[in-house]
Length: 137
Length: 370
Image (cartoon, rainbow over all chains, first blue to last red):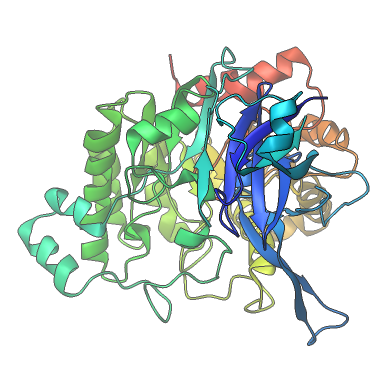
């Protein structure tokens, strides 16, 4: 496992996603209401570029005629077949126990800490004054 | 939502050597005006002033909301240079033709609603225009793409003339008719069109679609797209039943029919039921000399998308086995939201011989491709 600096804090706006390549695999780094999450850019169903999907809420219902929309912006809907994945865990809504998209731990760290290493900053130059989004792969 | 991409590594297909025939690709226009160069002045004015009239209320709206923009397109299929998904040849090459090593792509245009047009003379002009558009805008610059001859089933003389006009033109591989028409396709009034297709060496492709004005299910209009999507199966079952029981394959034994976008796993159970009833009701249909399933096995081909996904993926193999290894062809349905990826859609290992047939040989043989 290594820590990779993938963006400076503020670079990814709330509701947006930045797709980065880390150790040969594409990973989508999301900002959901100020929290950052990272999922592999590959749907476990048929291999679609998952992170090009839309962040949506979860429509729930206890019985026909009743519904509520919860967890706004926390479900990622695949751009192909619409399967929904929990942005926090990568679990699919349709089969959470056995179908999930790989998720990665994300932290926000000050440049000062990162300067001490060890970390990998492939394309994001780090300065000690700023904060950075770091993904562990 | 904005998506920024950094360091996107080139995608290398793991099966780019496969070399497969994609039996369902949809080219689109950027706008209806793209057809104008292929319309006479009269019909160009008609298109601009009056436009199309399908057999449904709100003529130009889709029947169901399909959850993604552009009436159900793959969200990553919008060309970077603008335009509708499927309207940019280079982007189609990048996402399908080159990516998967497609040797031939069967184009099934769903534009202009030419086959459904209530003004059949305008419909016939639109069919000719869409056919010229396929040839000049797609097949000429990209010969891997093969056209489907559009016809209006409700104007047989024009349909037959159009089939004869395209006969022998290698840019066209089949004749396309929407399965949802005014009457089931096996009815006698459609026979001259089917005969013309067979006589000119074209299979008939029945790709889901058509605005007949009838409810899309036998039980009435469904509420949800979820139900509507399943009704594709009912449409295909009704067509197969009509073609077989009306005696079309007795009358035109060399007619070859391709079912596109209706799935296939229903075929065995439909045929079991038709065979059962043939034994009991044969006197009503003495023109049928054989079990209904025998006509199906001989005259009908199926394409895979939208593929069934049984909870035990290996169950698909039995279904393939019943339908016949030589009667199934892979289709992506690019750029629609429910399209299938040839690398991952079938979640069970296939015997190598069948794999070749499914992805390549069956289509090569059916369409006489080289």
